[in-house]
Image (cartoon, rainbow, N blue to C red; front, side):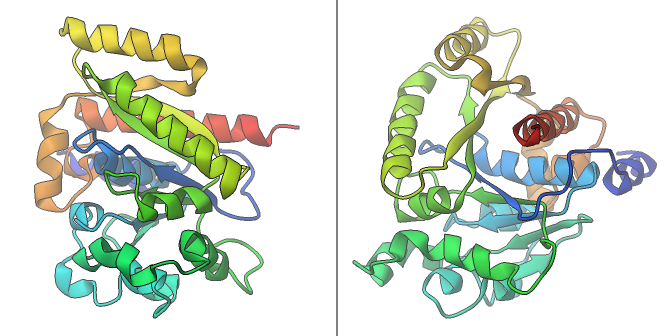
Length: 285
């Protein structure tokens, strides 16, 4: 990788929409595993930071892959999102800095796997994350972060419900595979249920097609089907199947830091630009 290029991009700033009075909270969700959800959380967060946003990633997956993918050692996770959800720590206590400028992460551990048993039938159990995020900026005149990205586990469980109850919008990474629409329909039903019972303001921010291979007829057909089904909710940017994206997590780095010039990095920068543009459109009078 060309380190000079990395510094230019990661430290650079770009004109964006007016900074909101509170952070925009986007949950990355898909009940299917292996669709690029955590990869998208890490790299979208890094790309947003590269164009001047302050980003917090909240790792709500017991596997902790977002934490690992940002180079956070297990020994640095003495306080995690598990402690936050059970009420034994504040969200601020679970946040650690990363090597990426303007990106921080609230880390995860395997303890999260038992959260449903821990919380049982507690009345506010679906709002633990929302309340923790609200307290994060208590007493501040401006938010500490412009964007909070919540990396959900690959299931529609209490952790994902907490993310949806806290979020302004859902971003859905969708792999270019045969059963993509089937899984999407189930997720959309869950979003509607959360909207009707817990969070009426929840919207679908967008759907990003991942692991796209232009040489593969199936990839092209899946993209066409999803666009027909979801219309302009599907981002123009598609994340390609790219070896460098797959390699980067083993080095504890986002792909934009690992190899800025690869096709995967370029795609995530374009996706960040689309996310910013949609935010600008939402804030337009």
